[in-house]
Amino acid sequence: MNRRHLLQALAATLAAPALTAQAQFSRQLWPQAQATPVIDLQDLQGQRWSTAALGGKAVLLNFWATWCAPCKEELPSLQTLHEMSGAQLQVLAINVRETASHVRRYLQATGLSLPVVLDGQGDLARRWGVTVYPTTVLIAADGRARGRVRGEVDWTGREPAQWLASLAAAPR
Image (cartoon, rainbow, N blue to C red; front, side):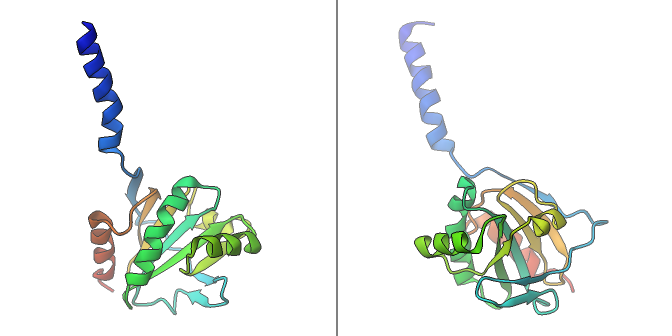
């Protein structure tokens, strides 16, 4: 390979990541044989969220932490989704293994106002099978978990919008 071809190949290699950079995630269906854990949570503002109270709504449970760079990249799109979602969707962010004061400072510094639940010991994360951050569990309007997304997602994108639409339309 001559020098000119080598430089062209190098330039193409360096340019490729910028052209194809995107969030990395994997989406799996929730195992049909696996029961959906009961939701009984209280957010930082003191509001209680339960399976019964959320009945008829699709729910997006997002497990995250402030030390997780992909989580921090994803949270603004979750905030937008929270602000834009109507009565058909509830976004709940579950912070794993951090103190209330630390999470409150983070939320204040970033201007995030979506409902945040603390999972101080990681019990909720274990119950929902979370091993990677961020992980989002998609729950249909019938109260059954339908899928799990591991990794960062732009929740304002077309593909996630299709996932969410199918949750709201799920038979009860």
